[in-house]
Structure formats: C-alpha cells, structure tokens
Image 1 (cartoon, helix red, strand yellow):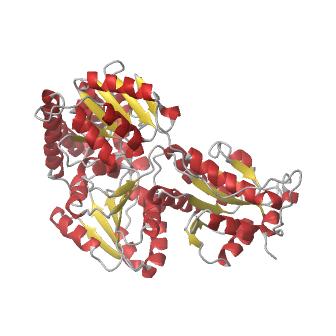
Image 2 (cartoon, helix red, strand yellow):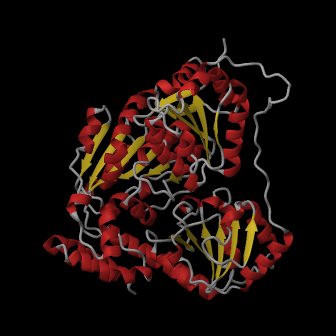
Image 3 (spheres, one colour):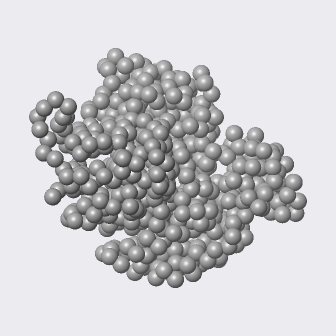
Length: 596
C-alpha cells in the first residue's frame, strides 16, 4: 500500500528535491521510512535540528534551488526556527516538513504537543498549512513550493503522524477535491519605459555618481561594471553583495557599513548620485545623508524600493535586464574622452588605493600572537575562482569584508540580516554537498564553533570519506573571547569588557579535529600562516586551522562615522584598567590609519 508519506516523497522528487536535511523522531517516522525506501532522495542527518535548518538555507543559497528540512514535533520543530528566520530575513526559499502528533490527540496537552501553527505563524507567513486529510497532500506540497519560490521565503507543512501513515488515495473529480500540478517559472520583470527615462535623467545629472550593489546583482556582474564605467562611478557593495563585484577593479571601494572599508564610507559621504542595485542593507547611517544624493533604486521586490533611502526613481525589475535597458538609454560617450567626470573618478581611485594601503598596514600590524586580519589576508592569494566560502557570524566577518578580494566565481554566504552565530559549518557542509568538486572554506570564530560548529564537525567527519574531493577547510579564529560583543559594549555603552559574559572556555579545536579523524593544525606564529593555508587546501582530508589570534585588535568602524566612536571606546577601555591598555594602543594605531 502506498502511503501519504510515499506520495510526499514522490512529489518532492517531481519538484527536483534530491536531499532533505533533518533529524529523525517519532513524529516523522513514517515520512523518514518513505525516504529510506526511495532512490534519489538523500537524508542528511545533522547533529541538531538548528544545524539542519541552516544546511537547508545554505543549500538554497549556494545551489539556487529550494532547500528542504524536516523534524519531529515539539522540540524538534522549535529547533528549526532559527534557520527558518535566517531564510525569511535573507529572502531564501525553503520548505520545512514537520511532524505532529495524531489528529485525535491534538488539544489534549499530549506528549510533545505544541501549537505548531501558532509557533510558525510569523516565520512562515507566506505559507503555513497542516495537512488534515490525505487528499490535501499534492495541493499542500505544490503550494508550499510555489509560495517559497515566488516570495523567496520559508513555507511550512505540518504533517500529523496518522496522516503520514494513511493510504494515499486516488483523487476523484468532485466537489471538495482540489487537483494540483508541479511547476513554477519565475516571471520576467522589467520596469516601465517612462521610469527608465526618468532614471537616466537622474543618473546623468550626477557629478559624483556611486553604485551601491547588493546580492540582487548576482546575475548582473558585467552590467554593473559596464554601468559604473559609463557613468564614471565608483562601486560599493553590501556585505551580501561583496562576492558579485571584483574588488581588484580600481573603482571598486569594497563593503559598506560598520564592518566596511574607509573608501566606501568616504565615497558615500561625498557622492551626489546613487544607483542602488539589488540591495536593502540596513546600515542606514552609512548611506548618504537624506537629500545629499539623487537616488535610483533597482530591485525585483517592489516592497524594498525606498526602504532605506529616499529615492527619486524606483525601478522594479531584474537587475541585469534593468541595467542593460538603462545602459542602452545613456547618452553616447565620446570615445576620446574620459568616461564620466574625471575629477570624481580620480577621487574614487585615490580613495580605493588609500584603503588598500590601510588594509595592508593593518594586516601587517604586530599582535599577540596572531593578528586576525593577517590570518584572513593570508588566505587571499590562495583563493581560486571555484572556491566556496561559508562565514560564521562575529568579528571574522569584519576581516572577511576588509581583507579578502574574491575572484569572480567565488560564492560566499553568511547569515546576513539575522546574523546568527553557528551557521558557518552547516553552510559549508551544504555548499560541499551542492558542489562536491569545489573546495569549501569556512571562516568562523571560537564563539560560533563552540555554539554549533564543533558538533557539526562530527557530521563532517562522518561524511568526508565518501567524497571524491576532500578539500574542506575550517578556519577558527581562536581568541578565547566574544570579541565583537566586547567592542560593541565599549562603542555603544562606554562599558568595559565583562569577562563572565564575553570570555570563552579554552577549547583544543585542532586536537578535537584530529580525534575525529580530520586534520588539525594550531597556528600561533604569523610566519606560518601562508603555509598553513597552502597545506590545508592541498590536504587529503578536511582540515581545521586553529588560528590563535589577538582579542585586542579593534573593530573600528570606518571614518568618518568611526571617529565618533573613539571616545566611548576609550572610555570603556579605561574602565578595564591595565587589561585594556593593549586594546587602547591598537585602537589609537588603527585610528591613525584612518586620518589623512
């Protein structure tokens, strides 16, 4: 007898699903049994449902296909929430299939009974449905997938245990029965011609134009560069947009925001024209002042137009097609003349070159024992276009944003808007499963690793012997401290570091890796960084690089905004007494790099 669970597994295959991330439990036993009986659908067991949810989100981010997760009811379902919110806030399509107790027990305070519809009402606001009868299954699965893809958000399907086990019926053609079909094709979205014309007027009137590029430009990399060249503009990116602009270009100023570059901050403070492409970055204090720049914004989602900055023209459309349409309408440029206002382009390139000098100087700044900026900068020459980067959340993201120049083709992802620690290793595993022939590099801190990453090294140890290509490197910046939290306390509260809150227990990351059959290397000598990266990327098994880094290296925002943060930072450090002296000295040194 074919069951409802069998029918669901078959439907998942018709939607192109080849793996599902989760953790088993009695609430989904029948569903897992159906997965086990099917060829072509892999069950990827994480050590925790939260990690499974991150893996599903990572699968969607790296592969461009929908990620699917599953868990049992009660605690298992609750553990999925963090990953589902990661998907919601970063606009990523995922589907969660979640078990529930038998329908006859609901409302009786039964074992592990949780009101799942209420629990997931916010995170799955675009589609949330409990399957009440076997006849609903095709409709619910199809609508979940279409809703997730159309809205780039999570969809949740709740499956009571008795429904999972029921016989899969043949659907009659009668009242009360809804037939459905598999399939979704993304629409072609382009702006109105009149809006394009108005946008060209705004952009060509600017004397100091700047492009602000986000993740929405993933498929428009050539068009972004062509537009910047035609306008004589500089380019800054959001954190999520960083992989889609070649920062080796002389007019690419790097990432904006609190963790961004000085070049981006200075150019945003000086521009009089802003073209925002596929970006909804929340760091509004780093945007131009309201009224300073005439802005045009391109986004596929009309809800974000004007969301962060007052725009003169909003263009709802695909980034590549919209940029191409704008480019075709630009006035012809004299081939013998400089592209755009030469004085502004010279300013852009001067700021970019100055920032590169600052970044090199900071990476070379002595620290005790290893400067974390140097640890990440040492990876730069070893990055190849086929690399996949997974970032955990913490101070490591600052050094990624400021020190790495990603070759075109590199994909790099992080829990962006939610900024949840613990995502790094799960993302990396999902990346490797999606692209098994490509090297994966996870950049993490000791906080994220202790929170979730260490347990998923167990998953890595279980998986890698089956891989034809074992290149998988986990770099752990180990400073025994929640550095970002301490610097935020100093900056925002003028408060000293609170050891009970921020200090972390020592953990032998390299030795732990070795105990799992992985390769582990502990680095506390900056001269060993280059060789450590080279050997790790050529190793015959995954490698954990435990970089013993200096917690005192400051997380100073770029100037001019960062200059306002010096006094509260120093006030907090002064309250730390002698223990804050080294950080205060480095803070002054970093500030001197910003002043010109």
